[in-house]
Image 1 (tube, rainbow, N blue to C red):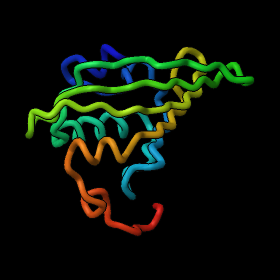
Image 2: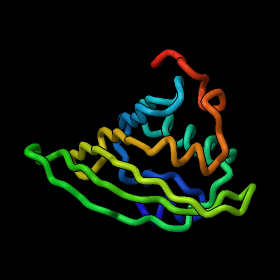
Image 3: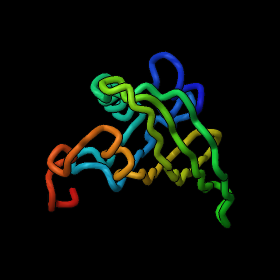
Image 4: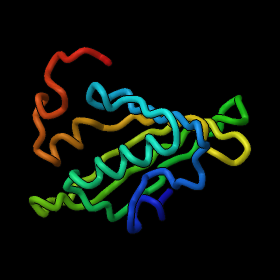
Length: 137
């Protein structure tokens, strides 16, 4: 994941580790951006989003990995740090991912992001994130 995020053509989740029918969810994202079904749909979304997101990720720091009672599920806490390319400001955010892995491929990824830290670093308002009080889906 670190190599995929920090390298050229960043994808956050390496394509070769994603099941064809992967589901990626980010429950605290703006409406319309919370659920992506299928590897190609996720990769297309992430590439398009990365093209307009003014951040150059420079560091991935794993904080903890937790095994669960289900051998297919793990929880990973990590921090991303980088530079906002429009301002030169360095910033970081903590994230938590809940992954279901089967046959060596990620089947489901649910990521919880520190939206406040991200918004502050990018100087975003609630309206930029889909509007204050917007519906949940």
